[in-house]
Image 1 (cartoon, rainbow, N blue to C red):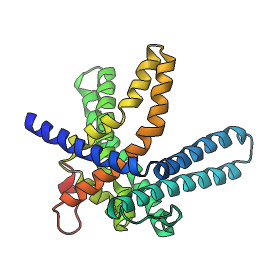
Image 2: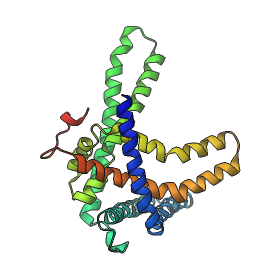
Image 3: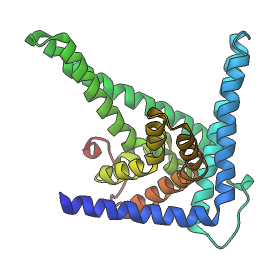
Length: 262
């Protein structure tokens, strides 16, 4: 177990080092795309506030427009990072990294599958917990345990299948196929991914901690550092992690779900 954790930690160090090198060389272009995502998100919230009394049809149309714009920028960011990883010598314009209409549609459909998987996992946990009602165990205990197990199961599922956008952008896979490949390539890599996410989320946790102990200036500084450094680095790190897992993947043919759940 200790050796496994050492190997996992070393792998995370490799990913962070590679991601930092790429981010440092191309910081402004990567940060620009991240900033555009932030502006889109902030503008959508602002628009929702000012349009609260507007016709619901118009609000839905505006929400859909902002969602599409946000996802397009997000996918463009991944395509741009792939270019940096595969062809560092030649420059590429951000405009040329805009995903195709087919890729955007596949991403939206895969996102729907993603949500259905999350709901399905939680539903299975609830169904498994339901018979325990008749065992005499207090309902409050059963509910708390079911919620806790459900949250853990959702988190594990989210980590296992959240790499599907990379397969759509990098390999031009279909929606369901990208979900299956994400499940297959993350098999055996959960600890590494979890440690990577823990490192990347460290500054956000520090921000919450300093806010909790009422150190607003320190919390503000950590938040700024997280926004301008960690967010761009996280995008690159996850892309590097995907490419590393894909290079190490030994499966032949299209993977199935049942053999890659555990």
